Length: 429
RNA sequence: UCCUCGGUAGCUCAAUGGUAGAGCAUCCGGCUGUUAACCGGAGGGUUGCAAGUUCGAGUCUUGCCCGAGGAGCCA
Image 1 (tube, rainbow, N blue to C red):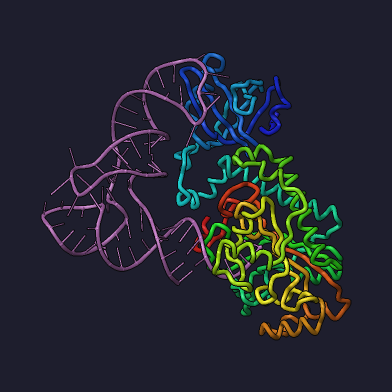
Image 2 (cartoon, rainbow, N blue to C red; image 1 turned 60 degrees about the vertical axis):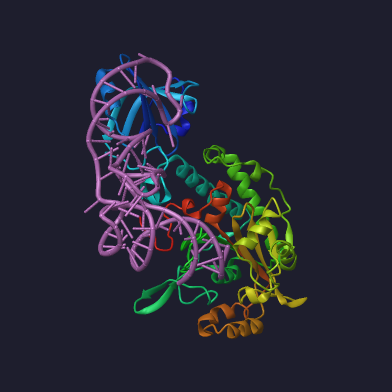
């Protein structure tokens, strides 16, 4: 019976078939240990000369790293085996013999591994990262679905920039120029009018020439948007979602976090409430360490790190000066120079995980902002319409999936959190 | 776009301006409980490319190519 390795414990004493690839092998005289992986886990199989047909023993000698194999044998509990179980082999079939697999179980440089990403994904740590990515996305969706949100995805080919300033990837569209979406938010503001609570989840594209461990040119973003929700409400939503996601990953992917050597104490100690500080308070914290920083400037990566190191959990920074935030952010009625915006800065120097806020809901003010920012008024007509036909206070945020994964996994660079990273000057494989 | 660092065997790295080396991988041999197994042996090189200085360049100089880290911008 074909079984998956993650379930092997249920089959103790029984004969099973595993289908997978040779992870590694070791030998000692007349005994062979072969490690097989199938995507769900790794299992050791033991083959002793004399216990099996000579031809089986001979196959075990010939098998090479990453050859695809089908193995039959009996499951046995054994403390000496990694994982606690092993298979006493009865037969092995080599489906295809791999030759000179380029990634050995030794250390390799990132320069070497990135062009081999299609194979690198097979290795243990990368496998754990992908499992955590899957769980994180599932947890986000489960959280929102459980609160009655509707997944209403937004277009990737879009006629204009959301914020006008950021560099976009142009695409030829039957002779016209369209752009790859950098956010689904504006469309979310339309679908809340139809559905109330929505989210979109998909790839987004930024053509900036960013070359840091926090940037990809193609990355995934989860963007919830809610009608009749204010700034405080959106912070509460983001906080509860992050806590739910961490909880699910700790509960379901503990082994993967262990493989990644993640210090889970840094995750388990995160409880609500997350600190909520104003931009002005954040500036005061920064000025203690960076005398040159002036009120009104946007935070750079080193400034975000100063803030994140001042707390041991994610921190909300709200009420940024309107000038450094997007045109669609609602102004604070108590102080027109401030916006009802919020960023969530992750711990351990991971940077901005979430950006969001309350949106401008007044037609005349929004039109003024569009004109101030010299945006093409015609292209934004539908967006302005939303303020004409039953406008309401509304808020939302965007969560950068890869940064969230990097934080939870405790890895430095977002390029390892997506199966095939797209970076400045790297689109292979 | 700017700043910093790097490029030597399949991989990871050594090598005062003076014979190009080790570990791993591969191949051969040994070992009946291995845990990135171990032990012995063998093969393996246009030192990123081009020019220059020098009796002599992996090493020094200049230019170029490629990569990594960071900045700005952002999630």
